[in-house]
Length: 380
Ligand code: ADP
Ligand code: MN
Ligand code: MN
Ligand code: MN
Ligand code: MN
Image 1 (cartoon, rainbow, N blue to C red):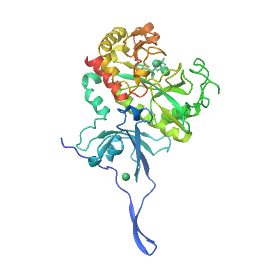
Image 2 (cartoon, rainbow, N blue to C red):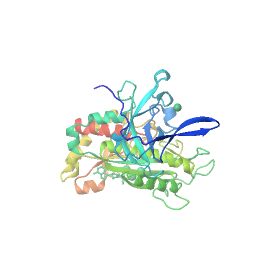
Image 3 (cartoon, rainbow, N blue to C red):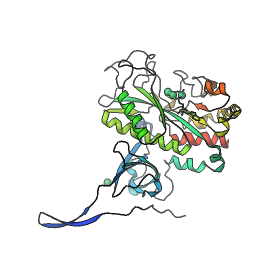
């Protein structure tokens, strides 16, 4: 099938009118107040550690429409951007295509304005090499759909003060008290940056994302929110949209959020991960423990394939300390936070439920984690 750009399906409602200005007659378009759509995509820097550590990979630009279009992504036209400025194209053939795939209400601008998650296509109409969502789409056949995979993604992040680049709330030029009181802590001495974490949760809920909670993390200035349980494509889209919201709100708070897997590399400080909880239909019914055990067995055989795609810089985080398993070892266990795959205690007690893949780093591509779990567990 030939590649065709998707066009605007909404009816244009602009009028034209003559206007006099400095002796010349100009034709201007009089536009009723319409809708702002923020087209959002991931850039090409994820694969480049020197960029991926410091800058986030989210990009966006605003498209104005004369009338609101609603929340159906197929109603939205394709758009293009300069891929040579995002690490996605060479300067001499630089146009990349944005194709809307998921639309939610923009919680910052308010309804009817929207956020539009997009896939990126190359000029030849094929999915761009950075379009990991397309790779996930391709692996979801009828058999996978029938298994009704659920994901719960624990997105950890670390706040940095915009002006200094220092961990948010840490004393200038120094360190806070040793880790211990901060995880799920409360009080000005324990919780640094809660106003942003709260505003972010509120924004995710207003956007209609399936956010299931937040908590202060082990290292002060580090936080977590959870997306899920949702299906594979929704997982990727909602994690990307929630990341965009976090960075966007950070502009207002003067706080940079980083997904660097190990933001503080000297001393006794936890890294930043993205535990991915996963279940298939068979795991969620009585007798499911057997299905979970079979999945763990398969995961033990594809450790290297997963670990090489679970986030740049993850080797600094997966040391075997700080509630991680060493990157070169595959271990599983019930309630074991030093394992690669953990079976939560309530799941063990009930005899069915889900497993937790503790290996992904905070900067992992959520579409890639979703795809690899399907590939190993359902296709392995
Ligand atoms: P932890 O105890 O590791 O900190 P959290 O409570 O932070 O766990 O996160 C658990 C995540 O798992 C939540 O996002 C939750 O929605 C999700 N979850 C719960 N049940 C399932 C399931 N059956 N399949 C997949 N994910 C699930
Ligand atoms: Mn331009
Ligand atoms: Mn958690
Ligand atoms: Mn956590
Ligand atoms: Mn966890």
